[in-house]
Image (cartoon, rainbow, N blue to C red; front, top):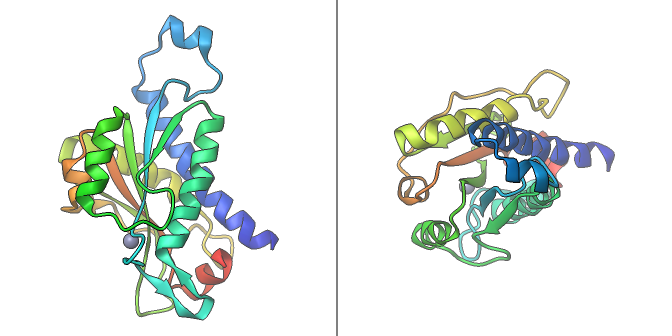
Length: 204
Ligand SMILES: [Zn+2]
């Protein structure tokens, strides 16, 4: 379905755009990079953390039989393909329906030497009308700029209905082990509400 497809890709493109902006901003240009570049992210390493998994489904949308763990992984794979197409090396904390602790996630991330970590989530609410996008940061200095950069990409998403931009909630600090104990700048992207009736339809 065209509309659904566009919705997911707008989400992915927004995230890639934000990640690209940040990496380009923070990378010192080098002669080597310029002669060997096959994409704007060549030489950059990104950890993608699909939230939840295995025995932890995360939020869900019963009307469309959606589980957050599956949707997060789907977005992570689409984002991985786009990042790799731009030359980045991507590391995934999980590649299937594995159960991972926060400890598993940041310990893995810290072995990669990656520049940034993006943890992909979808929000949930008992109110099927609730929907907004935001990002979270843990380490005050290291993470905040990344969280704001990804948020700037996500906030350009269209709302699930109509053409106005999606509602936003200002990024805030959140004491997640994944954020606090990863060595690199890290953010949790609470992309959209999986429980929202229109987002559920678009995702499905
Ligand atoms: Zn989640």
